[in-house]
Image 1 (cartoon, protein in one colour):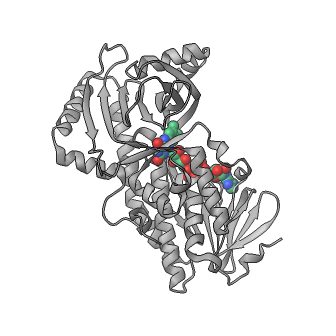
Image 2 (cartoon, rainbow, N blue to C red):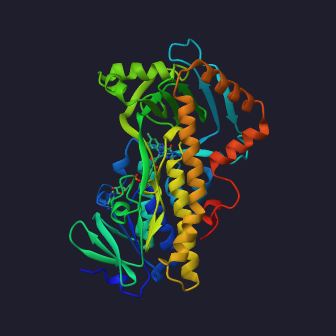
Image 3 (tube, rainbow, N blue to C red):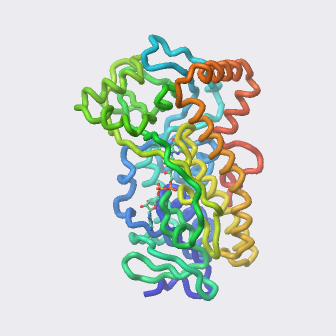
Length: 418
Ligand SMILES: Cc1cc2nc3c(=O)[nH]c(=O)nc-3n(C[C@H](O)[C@H](O)[C@H](O)COP(=O)(O)OP(=O)(O)OC[C@H]3O[C@@H](n4cnc5c(N)ncnc54)[C@H](O)[C@@H]3O)c2cc1C
């Protein structure tokens, strides 16, 4: 069977992978071009909706938030987004009696644009799916088995045996992208000996929008504020990096023992704690595709790059990819050009390569610098943190970087229409 909307000559986009960046791209292009562009998202996980990501939460940077606002997805979250107003960074051993704070990033709460919001994945995915349905995106609950160029279009074989055609295929099918591998695009990567443990923690005292990052010898332990709720009234999400070899011992006990391990790291600054959701452990890796395109194919999100979650930027990079690719495709369509043409894909790759490399190198370097307990390294990094803390201009620069608010950004990240 061939999809009727993608006749040879008609403009059509097929996104393999309905994660957050894939859905955002599909929604942006369908909203902007309506019937002039057929948009299909294929993902075997679609029937489960946002529930697939239950218990996960993301720090969504200001630029990505503006894009989600422009797409109407932010309004659908219905308040399920907690602004991060300030952040405190400490560096200590687990046994240290106090956690000296070396660096704080505080924002003026009146009128200031928060540099990030914490958003739970489930409502975010649901908001994007609702927008996509309303805009007329075809949501197809089938996996993509193969895609190859054939006579001026892409021929896409689905796992259920159907064949679709598209002017452009976007591989948004995650780190182990089948579509990327089938296209023969190389991958440079390695596994970290670390896992990221995520959980939702309830606490008795209000976090007041403050995030904490405790650099501990096993890796960073981040406490990220969520909207109120849960058994104790207030909640935070933790992203706890540990050596993978230590994870079974840390998480293998009964829930009280697991909570006790969390308390040792979380401290009781926010009062009594409870385990609201999780924990789940995710092995961490680094990876970068050798190129972000092939004939009529673009890579997006984790299919193009996987970075350490130390700075909470992986999804933000994927949303920036979606904003750039949507802009390149949209501009081509307005000029009557082929959306899968080489010029379009080259422009996309050029716009994303530097940003991605810079962020990948920065997060890898930060992790190496902070996930160890060698005394001279600790002294130098604490001196560095202390210096940054005394330099307001440098702090503003770091906040701008983390918020994705540098110049030269695609229109959607600036909150403008495509
Ligand atoms: C512990 C941890 C914490 C993190 N915290 C943050 C954070 O705070 N902020 C942030 O910005 N980032 C964060 N990240 C990174 C973020 O999770 C990822 O970058 C993001 O989820 C990538 O989205 P994706 O859609 O590209 O890939 P995925 O989320 O892997 O989605 C891929 C999709 O493709 C589908 N799929 C797979 N194969 C096929 C196929 N053959 N055909 C069709 N569909 C297919 C899957 O079902 C899935 O829906 C964190 C990561 C980790 C590990």
